[in-house]
Structures are given as C-alpha cells and as structure tokens.
Length: 458
Ligand code: NDP
Image 1 (spheres, rainbow, N blue to C red):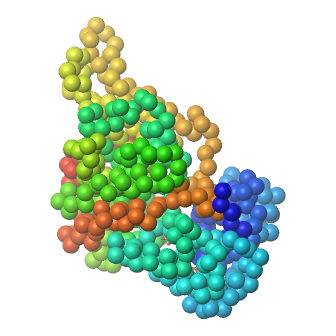
Image 2 (cartoon, rainbow, N blue to C red):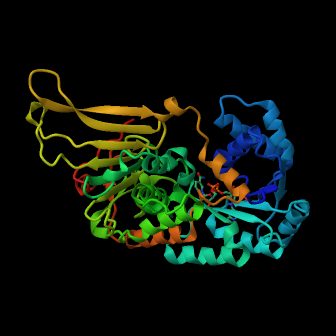
Image 3 (cartoon, rainbow, N blue to C red):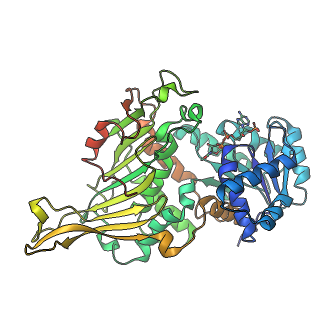
C-alpha cells in the first residue's frame, strides 16, 4: 500500500471544475472518513478563507439534496486559501510554508493547460514536486506532439509514478462496469469477436450546447473534447483482450495494447457538424470551423475484431443527453423463424447505458403471439441504480485513488499518446463543417456513415 496523501492543493480553486466536481467529492470523502487533511485552494483571485468556505458550501448544496452540517464543518475546518500569481515564486513559498508538515501532498491542476508548465516549474523550484503527487486533467495537449511536450514538462519535475492523468470516464462505475460485464461473466466472452458481432456503435450525446463556455469550446471541438479521450476509453474497454493478470499494470497494458491495434481515423470516414447558431455565441469566431459534432468509423486490426466496424459519434445540442454502446450481433446462420409481419428480423443488440439511469438492455427475439411461428424483438433490461443502489461519483473515487497512489483508474502516458495518434488525421480538417439543426442527430451524412444508428434508450 502506498502512503496516503496528507494534504490536497487545488490550483484553480475558483474555477468551474472545482465548483462542479471537486468540492462535492471532498465533501463525500469527508463523510466517508476518507479525508481529514489540509485542503489548500490556490488561485489568482483575491479570495480569503471565508470566501472559499462559502463557495464550497454552495457547490456542495448544489450537488446534494441536503447538507450534513457536521460533515461540512469538518471539511470547512480543513479549507484554507492562498491567492497569488502562478509566475511569482512567492506563491509557492507561501504554499511550501503551509505544507511544512505534509510529507506527501497532492497537487490538483484544475487550471487551463496553458498554465500547467508554470505551476509545475513553480512547485519544483519550491522543492514541493519531490515529495508530491500531481493530478492533471484533460485535455492532455492538443495533438500528439503537444501531449508529448506536456509529458516532458511533468516528468522534469515529478516521478512518473506520481503523475495521475484524469479521464473521468475511467472513474465512472458504469464505465468500469463494461470491464466487469466482460470478464466476470462467462456468457458473452465466447461471442465477443468478429464471428458473432456485426458492428459496435458508441454514442456520447449532449442535449445541451456550450453552456456559456463557447469561447473555450471553440478552441477545442468535439474530437478533442470527447472523441479523443472518453469515447476511445470506452472503445478500449469494449475491445481489449483479457489482462494477463489481475493487477493495475496488466489492466493498463491490455488497454494500451488494443489502442495500438486501432488504425488512425480517416477523414473520408468522418463527418463533422456544427449546430446552427453556434457562430453567434459569445466567444465563437464568426467563421469558426470548430465541430460541435463528429461521427466516424474506426477499425481494429486484430484477429478478434478484423472486419467489425466501430461507429462513434458525439455532439452538442443533440436530441438527448445519453451515453450508450450498442453491440449488434450477427443474424443466425440459418434463419428458421421468420420475423413477424414478414419484415427482416432485427439483430440481437446489447446496449450498455453508461449515462444517467445506467444499465444494460439486451434485445432478443421472442416468439410473437398467435398461430404463426414468427419472432419479434423484446428487451431484457436491468437498471443498475435499482439493482445495485448508490454508486460513488467518478471524481470522488478518482481523488480517493490518487491520494492512495493507486493508478488503476488513471490513463497511462502511452494510452493518451495512442489516442492522439488515432485522432490526429481528423484534427483541424480544412473541409467546412456541415450545419445541423439543434435537437437533431447531426448532419444527414452521419446517418449514412453507420448505415443507420440505434437511437439511445432514454
Ligand atoms: P476554468 O476556466 O474555470 O479555470 C479555472 C481557474 O483557473 C479559473 O477560476 C481561474 O482562476 C484560473 N485561470 C483561468 N485562466 C487563467 C490563466 N490564463 N492563468 C492563470 N490562471 C487562470 O477551468 P475549469 O475549472 O473548467 O477546468 C480546469 C481544468 O480542468 C482545465 O484543464 C479543463 O480543461 C479541465 N476540465 C474541466 C472540466 C469541467 O467540467 N469544467 C471537465 C474536464 C476537464 P483565477 O483567475 O482565480 O486564478
């Protein structure tokens, strides 16, 4: 067991991520007796301790139906603030002074990537990197070269064993459930290959737009924001070979191995869209060619997956918010039972619902009622919230793991570089994006790409 972190430092404590995710996670960890160490917020804004506590309370209140005062007060007692410029050595000297009793602090870089370098260097110069862990958030660069550059910056200050790269999808219980589904059940693994699976679809749909962050989003787009990380992470879990052992290294190696087998995406098999009205949003360039939607086809060059297309799509302002993987099986080799009404039989589908209301739905053929021996699809479905009860939030688990020095749910350096290698050919394509109306499933060409998508279950 690694030594648990004995202080948490949140750079960018005034920002969106801390407010939405990290304060609620710290509160939950305090509630579960997993956190009773100094939590130091750092930002340029001239906040005092009281302002920090007030903001923390507000965000915990937004994430919970009610606040347990005893728990919150215990967290509040540990909170303190340092305001300062990231380029000023005094900021880090004050931090070092505050951390004088901490042997293994953890630094969470909840700041724009442009500032990572300055903060990492500041920590190193103040002698804090030698004994600390660091958590970095996506985006890990803008492309392969810049992600390698970021790794060099981190490695210059921190031992690789003490760097934690968050793709919060890896922390979601529902996503981790893909791994459990595949390797804890005997039922499907024999079918999990190109003999029996026809195609796989992954949809990560957002029923909302840029939510006031259009200026930031316009420099990123759907490929960098979602496809390169969350979707490829899901693909890796669906497609990976069984790890050779039940340990972190074997799991991360199996994940990286399948990514190595994925061919770079091709512009010809990619459709990029932008919802109507996006260019009028504040912060968006009037001639922006940033995609708010991308659909693409991926292939995996392995004996297991040769010939099985993986269709991937993500976008903003779509008809719903949903994350779903649909595994479509092949038809029976020799169909003996007609589909009801003479229509073509629909295939067996396995749907992994990974968003809100997560669970699994399996569409099977059942005999339709009546004299005719024909079949119709019916669903076998489980809602994990109902079947399993409360599950932990991703950030709560990830912070807990990183404080323990556990890497299982964090992306390896190579994994991220493989992800960039895969998406690189479709980054910044010069062809104009296709406009789609808000509330639709993206441009019409995207529909044709997959030969029809399965609409997510809501
Ligand atoms: P914000 O844009 O809210 O910025 C966080 C804080 O950083 C701000 O409150 C600001 O604090 C400080 N900051 C902003 N610009 C600069 C600058 N140029 N120089 C120094 N400090 C600056 O970011 P988020 O909280 O949204 O995200 C933080 C990190 O997490 C980013 O890397 C982002 O990509 C990543 N992320 C965010 C997600 C989210 O849901 N928000 C999801 C996934 C990843 P102050 O001015 O007080 O110093």
